[in-house]
Image (tube, rainbow, N blue to C red; front, side, top):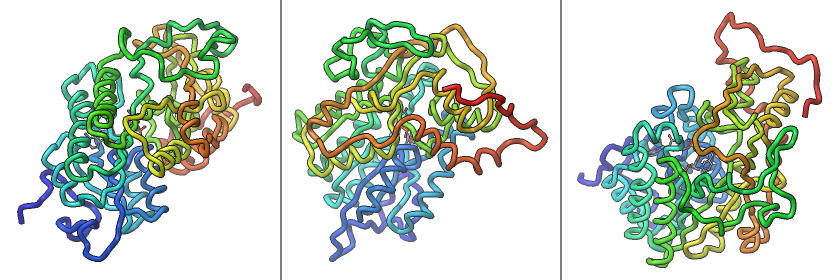
Length: 400
Ligand SMILES: NC(=O)c1ccc[n+]([C@@H]2O[C@H](COP(=O)([O-])OP(=O)(O)OC[C@H]3O[C@@H](n4cnc5c(N)ncnc54)[C@H](O)[C@@H]3O)[C@@H](O)[C@H]2O)c1
């Protein structure tokens, strides 16, 4: 047989040469999800499987390669396989493998109705260490998926998880005031309710990661505008939820909670810990994808995040996590901020909500942290090495 997908190991299907879309007489609808074992990809897999779609998941656990074993997403892949059964088929495929991606899409063809592209190299620091790998994954990998979709499933809706880092460090030029626990934008500023898509994406410091995501973002727009495909870039703020494989360089809220629960020292980098992030639960995010899929548009761009309802500074997040866990978080403060780090970011969801008035946020930060705590308690505390002293029980509560 010639149609092996080069480099891909399929974990689930007994016959990797047979695809759901090829089954005669079956009217199946397929969603291809890249980064399917990650935070966003796994949440999307659960949602679309529950809606009756067959899920083709692509993830090669690159997160474990980038950040080391503690960040591996293999546990989440196993969880999906067990929860979704035959509805979920996993391909251990690298999105840089152009021939493999083409073969996968060719095999499933027009049965693919939706592509959710959530695989990425997500770290600024790592991008500087391996610029070619970062660009090959984030930019060229995205092009591989767009072109495969155009050639084999041109009517599919293509959803891309872009990032607010496409705006570089421009948000740091906004008029910000230092308050007790956070930076805040000047009252009455046009971005008071959140930053809108009219902020320029060039003439600022991006990091190589930001630059590779800009390339991908513009490509996704172009496949909409130039080829007329239903594409959308969702420029996320902080994406979060209990399925995040938390690690120091990625997964802010889950990592704060994990450190608090496991007595791991947490380092705060610069801005006196008052940098503000808006946090959107992956559940709310994938519901936005669903809205877009139900009524797609061409070449769209949306800022998307927790907005004014769900945002927090590092100091505030620590206080809430400590209160939930009943532990004090041991922390170190380093005066130097991460290069280009946003001092204040709150997304405006107004454009998306104008197009999709049925969508709204359901989670705020305390609820997100509570859920991260409850759903990971057994897994994270089981990983604490034997003999390690228990955490610092809090003597006070109500710090938030
Ligand atoms: N988490 C955030 O705060 C945040 C914020 C803004 C944008 N985003 C974007 O959202 C998307 C999803 O983020 P997430 O938090 O779910 O990330 P994640 O790291 O949890 O998931 C991404 C998955 O992609 C896989 N992957 C990486 N490179 C791959 C490759 N070459 N081939 C196949 N699989 C590969 C990883 O193994 C991982 O399981 C990414 O594009 C990210 O840039 C994330």
